[in-house]
Length: 459
Image (tube, rainbow, N blue to C red):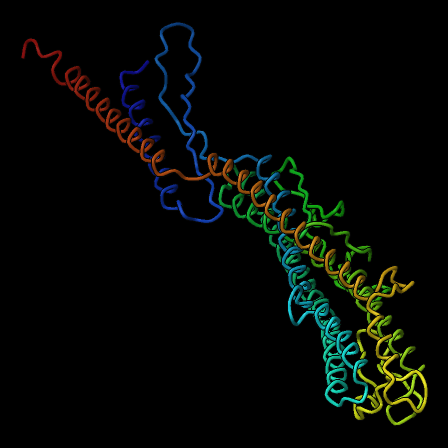
């Protein structure tokens, strides 16, 4: 071994510890950078060449790689659970908005307005000729009809807004997929040239995590470092790039995310997209039909009874309500314009008869076969189920938040930057650098003694 080998060993130590210090500095500089994974400089002894005989002291140290501290499996698990969390968060918020449209329980809710409507008929039955009682019936009926229409309109506006959200989410998925496909190309090129693309990996992980909050994204790592991405089993990002989603109206008139390559509906069941479509279908197929059925039964029951009696002017009764369901329920034009057109008597020439008004008040307790309950009972059941749906979604959202928080803590312990740990590493690298410098100084002194201070006899 050469007498200069000690210098080379010391030099390798200086260079290696300098890279360790630079890695620590990079970590500290990005301690608050979102998505950044802690970098670790990996040291390894330089392999000595084979020799036939003699003692091998080594060739020094080298940096084999500067690699981020991350777990692919943990990242995939977080992506999976974040998609579920995003689904329940969006579902809970959407259901709370629908629940708010009904204003239950409260003085302005439909249940309270129904009770006031039936009570106004009860009061009118006691004094059929009272203008005040008739005005109360008219006003309570108008307020109930207005509230039913407004609730129906609010549900429609809610679903229309969800369609807008779905378009925005599809556009965002396409943007993320395009960027992930571009990063795949950069990563494969970097790895092929021997460069570790830590920053590119971090960026791709952030995009995959965001993509998972939009829909159920599954990933598969290729040997060349690229990542394939699937949404519910359909490829979104592959080796040839990304396959964009589109939005189209299906046969039922609903907006759907569609695959551009085969025209099939994208089966999104998780993430914000899954929640958006699920909320829309829930509002249109569950909530809307129930409120329409209740309004229809209210119209039919009241009109049937109102048509059977006589007005204060001794005329046969007509329809009390107009419309067919919650979207167009209103007072009939005649009742809205003439208080005397409100029917109270069962027969002609009986202005003091309030039997029809009393029967109107009794409608609140009569079971309607189409509803399987009374009108007010069916509405109470619907309100209770809506409240249970909200409670369930909020509970699930809370549970998922706790789970994601736990997994994020596990990832932070692995990939997060700890200033205390970086400080210890920095001090260790500094001391190693100082020791390596001292080794070079000592070797230099030894060589000086050997070169300049030997062989001087006879001068």
